[in-house]
Amino acid sequence: MRPVSDPMSYYTRVDYMLGAWQAAQFPADQGAEVAFAGRSNSGKSSAINAITGRIALARTSKTPGRTQLINFFSMEPQQRLVDLPGYGFAKVPPAMQQHWHELMGSYFEQRQSLKGLIILMDSRHPLKDTDLQMMEWAAQRQLRCHILLSKADKLTQSEGMKVLREVREAVAGVATVQLFSATKNRGVDESRRFLDACLKLV
Image (tube, rainbow, N blue to C red; front, side, top):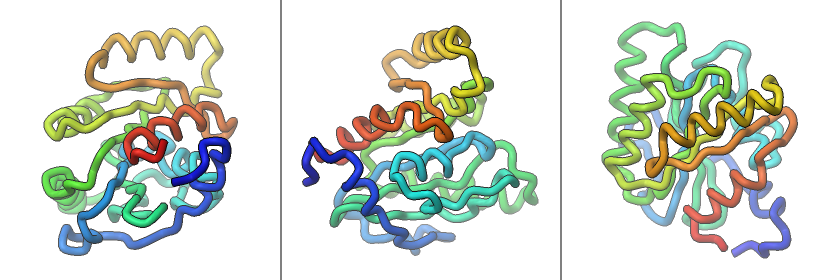
C-alpha cells in the first residue's frame, strides 16, 4: 500500500503487462483492476499517461482508433489498469469493429476483478450513444463509474462549469464526473482518488 503523502510514486511504478486480442489471453482474473474506455478521439491514452506520470505508457496517435487490443498494465501485485479499445470513430472495417465489440463484451462479462470504469468524453461533445452503452455495461456489473470530461483546457471556465453541471445532472446516481485536461494536468489528483477507492489502496 503506498503512503497517502506520496501520490506520484505509486502510479509511476505502472508497467505494461500484455495486450489481449482474445479473451483467452486475459491475465489471471485475480485482485482488482480499473478499465479506461472512451471514443477513439477522446484523449484516453493521453489521460492514462497523465494519471500515471508516464509520458509513453499508453500509446497515443494522431490517428484515432489505433488501440486494437485490450492492454493491461500492472501496478502493485494483483492490481492493474486496463486500456480498452477506442470506439465510435475509428475508420476500420466492420469486421474489426465487430471483433472489438465482442472482445469488450467478453471482458465486461468475465472479469470479476474489474472494480471500476473510467470513461473519457471530449468535454465539447459528451454523452454520445456509445458512451451511454459503456455506462450501461458498468451499471449491469454494478461497477463504480467515473467520467473524465477531457480536453477541458479547450473550454473557458464558464463553458467548463456549464458542461460539468449538465453531465452531472444527466448521469446522477450512475457515475461521478470531473473536468480533465491531460495537457495541463488538470484533474489528475481527483482521478487518482477514484482509482484508489476502486483498488482499495487508501
